[in-house]
Every structure is written in structure tokens, then in C-alpha cells.
Amino acid sequence: MKVLVIGGGGREHAIVWKIAQSKKVDKIYCAPGNAGIGEYAECVDIGVMEFDRLTDFALEKGVDLTVIGPDDPLAAGIVDAFEAKGLRVFGPRAAAAQIEASKAFSKDLMKKYHIPTAEYETFDKAQDALAYLETVRFPIVLKADGLALGKGVLICDDLDEARAGVRTIMEDKKFGSAGNRMVVETYMTGREVSALCFCDGTHILPMTSAQDHKRAGDGDTGLNTGGMGTFSPSPFYTKEVADFCEKHIYQPTMDAMKAEGREFKGVLFVGLMLTADGPKVLEYNARFGDPETQVVLPRMENDIVDVFEACIDGTLDQVDLRFADNAAVCVVLASSGYPENYEKGLPVEGLEMFKDKDGYYCFHAGSRKEGGKILTNGGRVFGVTALGDDLKSARANAYKAAEWVKFDNKYMRHDIGKAIDET
Image 1: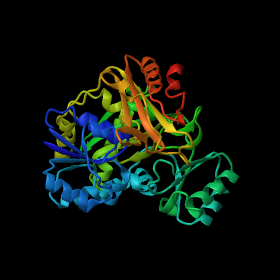
Image 2 (image 1 turned 45 degrees about the horizontal axis):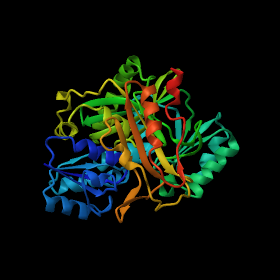
Image 3 (image 1 turned 180 degrees about the vertical axis):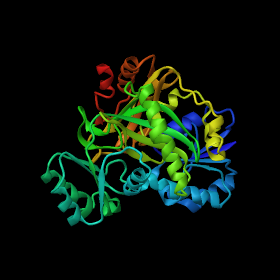
Image 4 (image 1 turned 135 degrees about the vertical axis):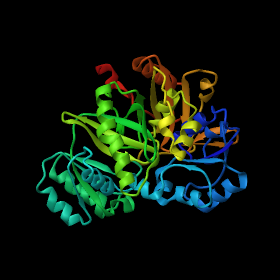
């Protein structure tokens, strides 16, 4: 069969790499792809928001299955566009993707259906938000309502910080139209865990757990980014926690979306906070997380195409989802200055070190090929992932492999998975 993957980052590289292992697949396209994805797929120069060109391409090439990676096209209705042309596609429709596209929608959904989350208020006007901040206890969390590349969340320790945050989100529009509306949320403390779940509209199957590191600097300092590294599984996601989440969060979310006429098919990413009062939802995403995908898929034993098709067909309850009894750690290699100002077009060396090495992967997040050379082409450039028998050995392997890759102004955090040492 022929498969088309939409996107061009590290998440899509991991998805394409996993699809390439399927015995069912003999041709993969990726739009737009990147230099690493080009090793497994034919990259097509079509943007992720060019729905007409993408559907025309899929029809012209006889594509049997399309997999959507990023959030923006999902929120804008790319799945609806493909289905309207009779094309088979993996991902939630626009109505279901609202669970990520609007923080206010997801918070209201959780309140209505009694899904545990932090207390909150929603504001359309900056002056109303500023007045409310006079009444709250700090720290407090400000969230731009819309999509902001994982960066539209500000943690404010006092009133002055919070006032500045409101200006940043709602007046200066640092996150664009995502800040037209804002959620103010009680700050939760505890361990963060990510759970990616396959969904077929009725049934939900959690994958193995993961934990992301969002801040740019060591010790969780600096600006929020799209993710500087991750590990899987989380030692804090115990069977007791998993059982609670399946009963009180995952299945209730599926049931809630169905009850609202927004049947969810695809991958539901549930960001959790393990508080003293039990697990609570931090956020939902309507797609594979990045870089969580880079540690979850290397541990997955199933043919991923089988699982995609079960989600589309509503037969996920017949899938035995399996993950290896090992661990994975991903260290993101970024260009210095990310997530604000950074240089592109820097030559990369050392990628050949990953060839024929089992358990070591270099997923391209922002790269391009020019004249036979690989050049940097983004803030996050690579996700270096390594497997190990346990988390400590996987972490050691990932940092060893991270040194193989060389480019000017290379930057990475040195404490990814450090929480492992505390268990």
C-alpha cells in the first residue's frame, strides 16, 4: 500500500521510520518532509496547510492511507478535507481537534464531564483578566486559548509577573490570535507525565508513558520550547496511576467527546500532573507529541499501520498493543538561541555514526539537504534517541550518541531524564 505522511519534523520522521517497518507498505510519501525523512520516503514540496494540493496529490498517486502529524492542519480541518474526497486518513476531524485547538473548550469539557483538572477561569478581555488576578493565590498559570506551538503557557509567581503575562498574551499578541482568549488556571504541583493514546471514537488504548522537558535550560529554567528531550517509560506512572487514569480520565474523555458529537479518532495526547490529590489533566493534544513520539515508537512492537487502520475502522478493541520491556531517552539538539533567535544553514557532521547501530536513532526535526550535505534548518535540529535495558542505561546511551552529531552553535540540555536518578 501507499502511505502519505503530512509534516516535516522529528515527530514525522519517527512516524515515517515506524511505517517503513510495516510489511503492508511499499511506498511512503511525506509532505513536506526533511533531510532525514528522505531516507525512507519520497519528500513532496507541498505545505501542510495546502489542503487542495495535498488531496489532489493523494488522489493522483493512489495513496491508500494518509497520516496527519502537526496540530495546525488538524484544527483547520485537513481530515475533513481528505474524507470529503473519499480518502482514508488517520487523525481527528476539526470538531474533535478542538480539544487541543481551544484550551477553553477542553477545560469546559472537563468541568462538564467531571474529568479531574485544575480550577480555572476564561477571559476574552484583558481588563477582566487583570481584575481577576487581584483575587487569586500565586503562583498562577496563564494559557493562550489557541495553538501556540507548545509555547503559549506562562507560569507567574506574583501579581506583577501575571500582569505582564496578560499583556504578553492578550495585548502584545506574542502568540498571535491564540491569545484572543485566555485561560487562567490554578498552579498544580507534582510530577508531569505524558500519555499518548490511540482512539477509534469509542475505544481508547494508552501507549507507554513518557515525560517531556519543556524549558530551554538545565534545571527547568528559561523559556518554554516545543520540547528539549523526553524519556519513556516514566517511573512515576505506576499501575495504580494508570488504572485511575483509564477509569477517570481516558475513557471519560472519549465518552464526553462522543456525547458532544465530536467523535475522536486518532491520537489523543494527555498531559498529566500527578498531584497529591491524584492525577489531573494539564492539557490535551490531538496528535502525537513531539518529542514524545521519538521515545514511544521505538519501543512499540506492533505494526503501526494495523493500529492506524483499527482506529479508522472502530476496531481498536481487537488490538493487542505491545511495548518492549526496555527504556528510551531522547535528547534534542538545538541551535543556540532557540526558541527565539538562532542561525540556520549550518553544516552537520557525524550522522553516519547512527548507521547500522541498533537502538540508536537520530530523528531530524529541522534539517535540509543541499549539495549532498545536511544543513540545519530550524531551532530544534535533531532528536537523538537511544534505547537501553533501563532508563539509566538509555540515558547514558543517548548522551553518548548526542556527542556524535556536530554543528556550530549546537545546544542541548544536560539533565534530560535526571529525575530517573531520583527513583
